[in-house]
Image 1 (cartoon, rainbow over the protein chains, first blue to last red):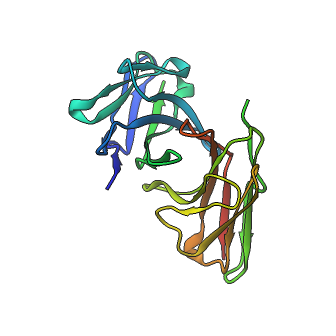
Image 2: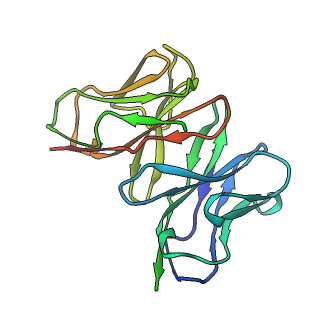
Length: 113
Length: 111
């Protein structure tokens, strides 16, 4: 069965430090991969997506992610975190007709000043 | 910009009540989805629809039904609400096999 694993439930980083959020997926075919962010009390906003082509994808708010097929990973990175990045981040894989999403459990990012 | 709206941000219902959650999108998307979000579990798909009057079960359809009479509207129905259906419900829409756009969510409490 398809699954997405986000190994870190919580991560705390200092403002200005670099960030990497991990995501591993299990899916037999070439996946469509997504990172979404959810601020408190809000819906989900798409940060970036990978469908095909260049394995390093750029997103909004200075985020990027790299698809590594050999490791079944799609880790999210940001070189310098801002306090406004504090939120919950979800990795997802799109499967089947209609591109249904299977989500990871999420990683809560805290930013300390 | 795509806009997905949900009828209520907060809802409190009693056990056994019939509950309707409404979702409307304004971008002529074929696909619409209902998820529930619980801490530590991420989002789980309840139902989705890829066309008017078409629906398919997701991973956790038990206790729920859906209705899609018009392309822009997708309703989630709890036939007889139970306390274990207390959750955040998120609606989304997408154009074919593209990214999904999410509404703000409805936090449902069943007493």
